[in-house]
Length: 67
Image (cartoon, rainbow, N blue to C red; front, side, top):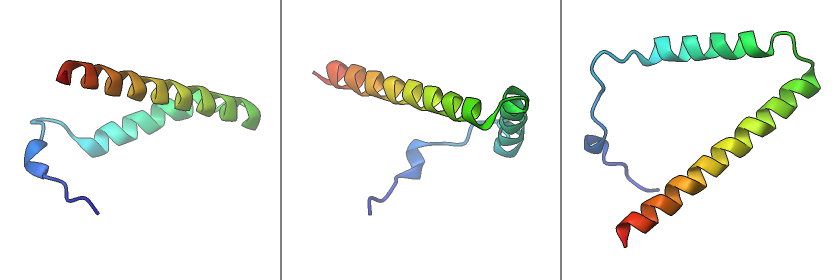
């Protein structure tokens, strides 16, 4: 298992992770509350694909900047 050097990730002053989590969950609930299970599944797939694409772009840009 890789050991993480947490000193690279200092706390963000004024950021409340629990409040952020609650707000995000509330936002998601409001978006999906009237959706069918199939619509929720499609939304999840779209968001997953978008996230994977953003991670690919990030890695590609990062490698390009290291050259």
